[in-house]
Length: 188
Image (cartoon, rainbow, N blue to C red; front, side, top):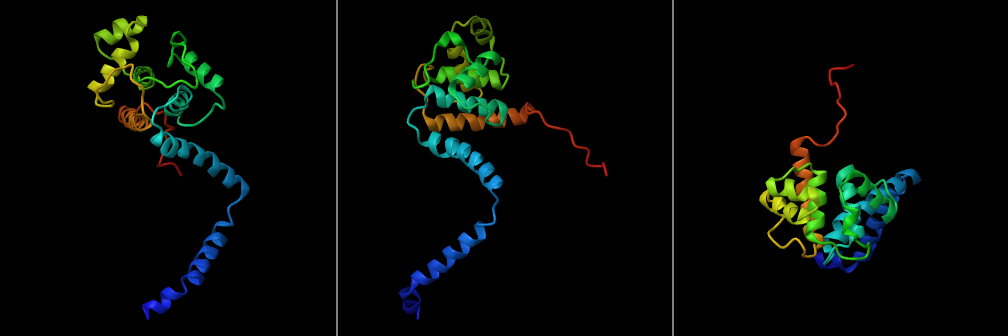
C-alpha cells in the first residue's frame, strides 16, 4: 500500500504546489514591495552578512545605521558615511574605503557610540582625543561580553558582526535606549 502511494508522488506534490501558489497570489503589489524591502534587509543581515568571511566598510556602515535607526534610510555609501560622520558615530580621520575590509576596532567604536557606552578612564581620556579610540572600544565591548577577545586591528567576520549586533540590540533594549511612543491602554 505504501509503495502504491509513493509510486505517484508527482501528482500529490503538484497539487500541494498548486495550492501553495494560489494561496500566495492574493498579496497586493504594495505588500510585495514592502515585503521585498524587508526581505532584502533580512537577507543582508541573516544570509549575506552571516556567511561573509570578512565585512567590508560599506556593509558595516549599513549595519551600524540599521542598528542606530532600526530602519534603512540611506540608499548609497556616501549618504551612509555622511550620516555616520554627522552623528559622530564614525570618524573621517579613519579614511575608510567602501570596498576595504573593516577592522574590529572601528566597528567596536561605532557600537559604543550607538549604544551610548561611556567606557572606562582610558576610553574616555584617550578615545575622546582619537588616540586609541578603537583599541579601548574593543576592550570595553570585551569587558561587557559583547565582543570576543582579539586585536582591534583584526578584520571582522560576518558572523562576528551579526553576533555583535544582536548583543548591542539586547543592550539597547535592556537600557531603554530605543525611542518608543507611549500608548495609553486605558484610553477608549
